[in-house]
Length: 300
Length: 331
Image 1 (tube, rainbow over the protein chains, first blue to last red):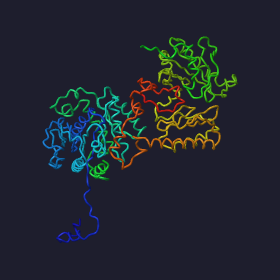
Image 2: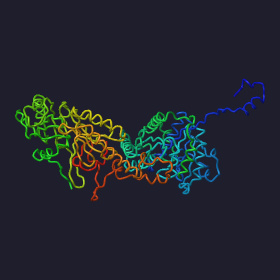
Image 3: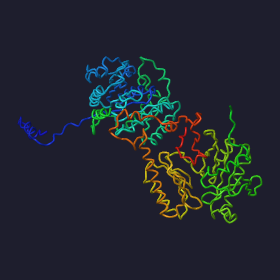
């Protein structure tokens, strides 16, 4: 910090720094862009989109960590073709540090696996959620994009996970049941002091343009009843390449990089990047993810 | 059971229905004379001569199925209004037309006459408005809505899009200053305030609830409060009193809404509400569900599609009830 003054005079620099009263500038803290994927209803294709979005982002040169936050019903490891030995359950039991949870995949992104078939994980209490918040902060300090694949439906755990993110990709289908459950989540988020920006994706669209129609309907209702604005990311087509996939096959964005669905996912991510001002780590301003998490857990 | 068309298909049955609900087409439309013959033989027959809220003449032509003369009749009517309408104030002093006012032709038909109506729309002369009547039932009662087909002369559908600006209100010169003051005042009152209407009327809505109405009637700007009481707005004091009623009603609605569960930005962006309480508030109301496109349930247990007035149609017969918000259009 004073290299020229103290060159050749060992010890002087240390004393000067020890006794100085000015503020020593620290390297700016950088934090990933945190994006949650959620849907009010299960079966909308949220995990499919999250896992393929992670792969596409990696192909675009970002360092990506995908955290499967569908506690007890995790499936991202199946979509990415890995068999995790250490999952979030180990974290909650105190048997693993955040670094041990990172599982590289053959397709590029790093996965943090949730546990599956474990009922207790689906109803995590405050303490495990605090541990998760600290772990997520650790991940966010070390990557460009942190994707959170949230549990379907509305639960306190899912709500905390969504609210801990800066951006929410809300995945729905054009049918009234999916739209209603998506709206229920929007309604809940609209009551919060600092909700994430909501970006809507309409999946399983039978005809081009139906996604936009569904978005317009949902956006109009959200604006009218709860004063919440939505941003349209785009639509994904009803694609046999998706519905006929079997376990063990590579993810769609790898096996079919030029199919309509993969191209649509790429377009969504381009739109998302434009909307959020870049999908790269950035100097952290405002409360950290861990601080936001702690605030939320105080309202548990 | 296969139900036949609710709307009459013959002129004899359709005309009384249309004549009795001219306000469904445009606020302030008044029937001046029935059975107009402007001397072009069979082509010179129109069902009625009307006067709009601005005092201009409107020739009403009904379109029915199989009316091969319809295009010719409409062209003859357009020619009539082009040549004669500005002079009708002198020719028919009792009709109350404004001297020199340009006339229009209004063609109304049912779905059975869709082909000739569509042809008229394609021709699209500027002084022509084309409306199609569509019928539906609510709680067993039949109503009809007017669907304005694409036409430059047609007033935009009421409630077609909550975010669309309605056409400019045709306010008499004497009331211009009052109207401009009210317009500015309403914009400042609440950004969530929505106005819909046509050239002669406005409805003031806040989150689907009616605050009041404004209309041009008899050359005067009149305001109607939520209680239905109408007053002429002749002076600044009248306008301020009307504005005061709007403010009071707005305040009531805000308070009511703040007390209702599950409402967002007005009520509770409070950091101290528990997450579980927030989740409990996330129930979707019947009104919201209907707005999303779900079927509405009516008294009596029948389930009907709530989208009765699709494509921007204007609902008839619901004017006296509190407006609960437009049903969203299905694309």
